[in-house]
Length: 446
Image (cartoon, rainbow, N blue to C red; front, top):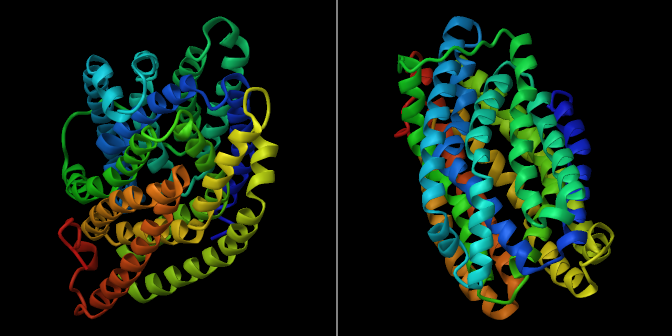
């Protein structure tokens, strides 16, 4: 699994340092300021909309569904083309509505921000709306390439995005200020998508505009109903976190954002490669009806994940402040900003092993064509996150919000582990010919 996930690890090793250069430049140019609060808010909402309404419901079920058609390239391409066409049309429609309601969305996302910050955020949001369409299409391309066991190109897209986001503010910030970041985000999303096309062609994955909903497409949409609920929760949790942070002090949103980006480096290196490869493996084993091997492969992946993440989490908590200072403390990012960000980094890193385990277990459910169980767990996690945020922010200010995330991850991991164990047992006890591959509906709850 590590060998096959190596392209993802290498792409992450290239992309993440570039990401921190990107964020360090943002910190140098704009600091933890109200303008940066506006950008973080505006940047997060298009991503949330495309994840919730487009890529989220499909990303977890694309690979399990496409894997079944890997040997039938004509059916594979029909499904790919239909998804690309519908994502394009749906993305354009959602972007149009979001552009019209931009001022209202920004007030809803950051209720505690000043009026002039809301105005800036609305303008930035409208400039970055092309990301909504382009990243949705990128997600479909990634699912298709992962299904044929090509993992590199979708991950290297992140490096392309970061390079553009580095170049644009350096070139344009003196003239356009914070707007240069929004222009860079839109251009970077376009280049990410264009990067995928040569690799799709190499694997004989061909796009032709297609609106007809064939049987395989309707089956995927049934699975996506449960996946929709699961994917709604993460961006909603992030939106709630930012909304509550906006009630604390100017720069609280930015401090949490800077901290979360540091947290995502080890998460991307350890968690994403394993869960990406495991999803393809388990989907193949599930279609073969080998549930005993599904169980063994899951246990092996969880053990490897904990072996990698536990030491990293402990060292990261210990070195949070010097690491934050090294990455961010330049220009308008001062020592006080470092202290605020490091507090949140420690709280996030405590949950790194839990983040990895919950992320991996959710993919295990998707691989076995059960999208409703993790959806129901996610709904419970959303409620717990709101309660934990309100309680812990009263005691620990902004880093209480980060600590609440760790609490929620712990509860989610325990619930998913127990339920997946039960699901595997039930599937193993099905009579021969009972049709593991026939468990295609989202109602197959453990």
